[in-house]
Image 1 (spheres, rainbow, N blue to C red):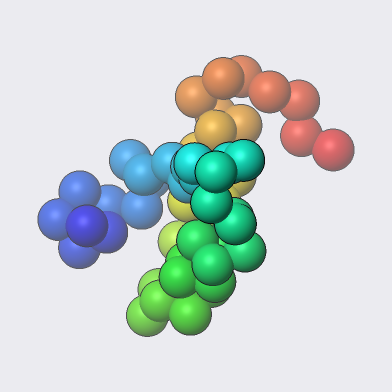
Image 2: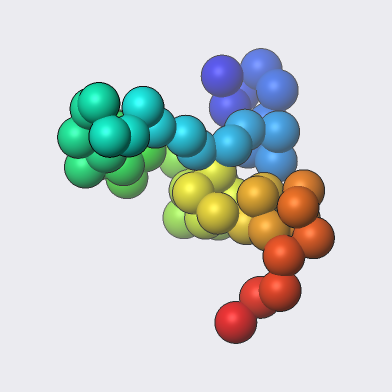
Length: 55
């Protein structure tokens, strides 16, 4: 998906509390992506989209 639409267009999400989110995070962390792409998917895209403060 990253190669088709770019990491800047993907948000991480889970089916919490029905599924354990650790497995889903692990899929992102072990994917063949750059660290910057992983950061975008796991949070920075949501920060930008929802105009959240960065700490």
